[in-house]
Image (cartoon, rainbow, N blue to C red; front, top):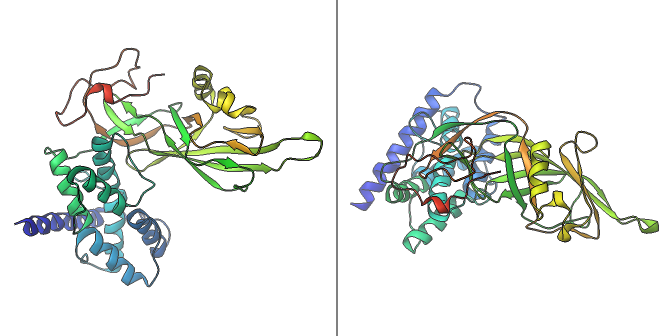
Length: 343
C-alpha cells in the first residue's frame, strides 16, 4: 500500500512537471541546457554533476520523480527547471514547498543545503529515520502530515525600502577573502507581509567583496569593503539590496550591528551613495568581520513574491505591511513563535 501511494504521488509530480513545461514560454529558460541542468543539480545535490547531458538529466529525474519524464530533451529540461524553480498556478515550486516544510517544522529554512539533505533532515526530525524513494514523493508525504490541507502560495508585494536583518555566516578577514568574492549572510528573522511569510529566517543575503587591503606601513590598518547585492525570498526569487536610509535607521537602533560599530567590530564605516554604493568599509585588525555579525540591509526595488499564509494576530507596534493576519489555518505555529520584523 505504501509503495502504491508513493508511486501515485510520484506520478502526480510528473504530471505537474509536464504540465508546467507545456505552459512555459519558449524564452523561460536561462542559458544553455547544461547551464540550466547544472543549476537544478546544485539545488538537488549541492553542486553540478559530471558526465553527459542525457545521463545527468535522467539521474536527476529519477532522484526527484522516481522515473524519467516523457517528451523531448528540451521538454524534459523545461519541465525539470520549472518544477524546481517556478511551479504553476496549482502547484508551488519545489523550492517553495521544501521551505514551507522546514519553516513549519524548524522555524527556519536551509536553502544553502541540497534538496537531498533538506528532505533527509526533515525525515529525521519528524520520523526519526531516513526514508527511501523519490524526493518529490517523500516531501509530499511530509507535507501531507504537516499540512493536511495542502500547500498553496499567496502573492505578496515587498516594496522598496523593506528592511532585513542579516548575519554573516563565515568570518571575513583580509587573509581569507579576495576582491570579487561572493559572501553569504542569512536572515536572522522572518519577514511577514499582511499575515504571509515572504522570507524566512535562514534565507540568504548575498554580498560581494569590493576591496581588500592588507595592513600597511606607518600603522595603516587593513580594510575590507563589502557591497550587498541581493536578498532571497521564500520562493527563491532574488531582490536587489543595499545599505540605505531605512537600514541605517535600523542600525542606529541596534547596537549589536556593524552599522553601530560596536565593541565586536570597532571601526566600521558605512558608505552611502558615494564610494561603496550601498555597502560598507571596515578597518581594523586581521579578524575584521566575525561570523554572526549583524547588519541591516534594505530592498532597492519593488518585488512581487510568493509567500506562505500563516496564522496569528498582529503584534503590538507592527506596521500594516509587517503585521500578521488574524485569519489562520490551524496548522501554523503560535504567534509568539513568529517574531516578525517590527521596525
